[in-house]
Image 1 (cartoon, rainbow, N blue to C red):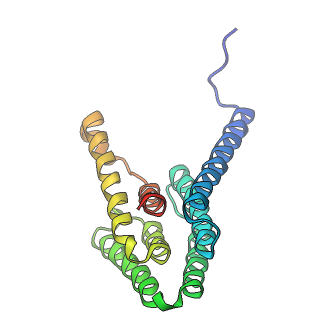
Image 2: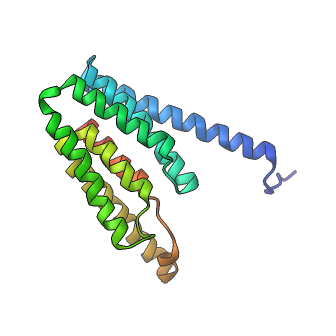
Length: 183
């Protein structure tokens, strides 16, 4: 007996459940790695929170091609306030890195409307508040990762790939995750 390849509501529910479990598992694994690397501290709590948010935002961007304000903006505020409270001597670093990262991406979004989503522009300040000056290598890794992916698509699909959109959020999140865990 062959299984039907037609999507059914039960199959869609099962797929959503699998994606949710995979998202939670990835967030838990990354959180464990952060706890191993940083021990028990306020900084670890900020990193664990941010890692979970970055995983959820990435999933959302992959599924819907949007980064929801209802997640990214409160997360940015929580991370920024936590960073300022935990290490007030570095207040200028947290604020400048956050605002500069957002302004940098905003320039590109305004220069070519439709080329860069405003969700990505709002994700950059979250990463800046989280990483301080380390936002630079994180965003560079994420941007280069997306460029490499685009090149692979162009090679594989030719000129048809130019009409495709690539969600940048997961690449930016990956750059931040690599920076948190390995740099």
